[in-house]
Image 1 (spheres, rainbow over the protein chains, first blue to last red):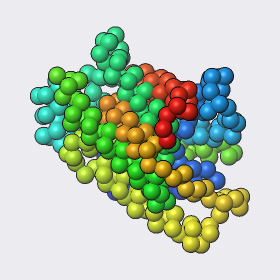
Image 2: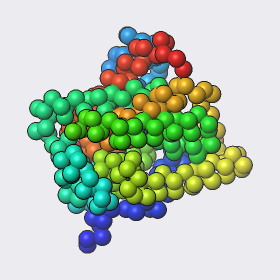
Image 3: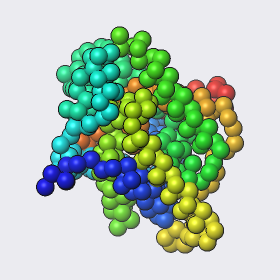
Image 4: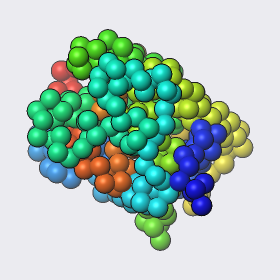
Length: 186
Length: 137
């Protein structure tokens, strides 16, 4: 029965992600997860502060159901289909441990050094989570999409703007990991 | 019935994200360290099939269920907003180790600290809406 807990290889996951996009396209919708953040802001009354949030969010309810499903999917997968550990490249794991004291690669799904609930009382960790989230939300709207909307949907449609956005995603990611991480975590 | 199908697609997507480890902070870190082909393989294989499928949809003018057009409108042209917005997104993606889809998945998996990341993402979205007219696009 151990195979149930094994992670899915890329050649299983990638095609299934493409299938997710096509299911949404055939339903007359599109695959884009970050627009839900805008919808949630609108539901929360952000339209009082900016016209950006004044639109018919009820037409976007379908996407909130996809979000609700993703939450349920995360529950099912973590409870019944995974041992909740992630094995990564041994050299990368060792480097994480030696340089940043993140020693949990291979033993956890997310590093408890950053994501354990008791770490929320640590102002440094709290700042990382809030600032990281903030840049994801701000950057996704500025760029008009995230990994699903640009890297999968947009590039599948061979859109130049999406290619530029994805190049941006990697510029930002590489700068964070190679330039800023050594400053932040040492 | 239609609502149930969106919920089902979401569950399907959530399980894929979690089981492929694309929702793991470690995998994102490893990707930006070029330590494994895994994440590139996921995005790359999704893309190859995505490009082929979209071409087929366009070539044969395949319609959505119910007869509506398939929604593949191109994004508006530009460089600045995509490059700068994308870079800001990438900084956050690497720091928090999660993009919007996996955030919801991780909340369901019981990593409650991700709710702080989601709150940050909502705040970032809200602030963008407040300042967008002052930003170059």
